[in-house]
Image (cartoon, rainbow, N blue to C red; front, top):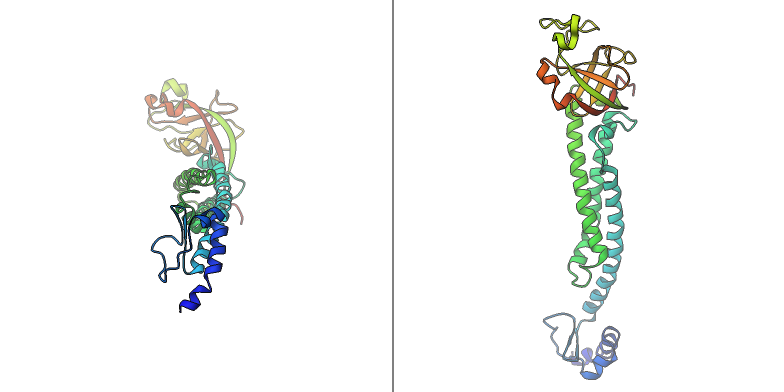
Length: 287
């Protein structure tokens, strides 16, 4: 066994020369102990080189160093993918996602695919991240910091997407989501009206507020828009939700919407005196 061991000493010395340089060997000798070192495979201590008796252990350490460099490249690519996901979500609203030119159902699917894509990226780089986190040298690298920061931002983005999905599903509850499309119509000035004389003049009827279309006005459903929009047109108003065009008004022209409320005090609230993004809802889309 002793004769067998000596066969590895020249090879170990050469390997130590590659890893540590000739000065280290000149200061000491190769450890010829029959037992493997208790600590790292190659240790520099007081100018003395101690090499592991099993050269495969040293080879693994070198291979991991190469993997760490590759892992940094992989995390840099993952950070770019995270940034793309974040950029797709930042500054958007739920209805902007629903109005992508496809059905609402398909828009929700796309959002789910983005969320799943982020999860896949995290899973794919799990090994690379573990390698880097174990390295005291590379854990503070710019690439790793970029990956962590991009990952945090993208997590915020997909959490926002999940909230958007919930908002969209609640807004279109009862609809076949794959038979509905949303079109951005523009920013509209909102005002409020009620069936009182101050709002409706001679047409005031507090007990039976009949609209120009013949329906009985209902808060949460009825709005008045210009004649450009047919009665029965369904719109989505940011901050209010779905409403139906059932009424007209002499002052309601262009990008103006009069929102029906049950009381005059309700007409004076911030909810009905502002500018809001407005979307036209197209239903019964043929697949």
